[in-house]
Image (cartoon, rainbow, N blue to C red; front, side):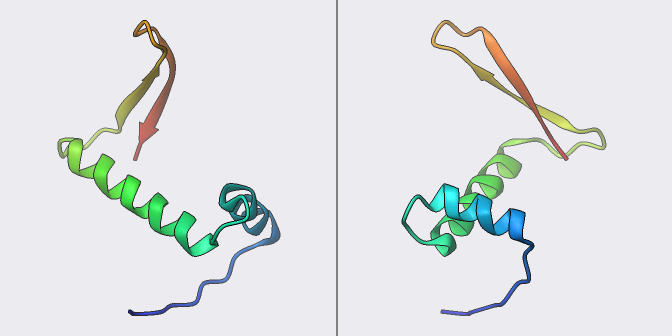
Length: 68
């Protein structure tokens, strides 16, 4: 398996620790990249940003997330 090294600041390291919740930071990064890859594959190519909506159980939009 290929390996790589990245430099991160303290705040990003804290975020990774919180998301890992006792697990692996590498797993958090793998899941994040996989999720981003899936989202990008589902969004048609466009020159303008696309939006993903987070809805509640009734379909009411709670938050919109803009993808670059």
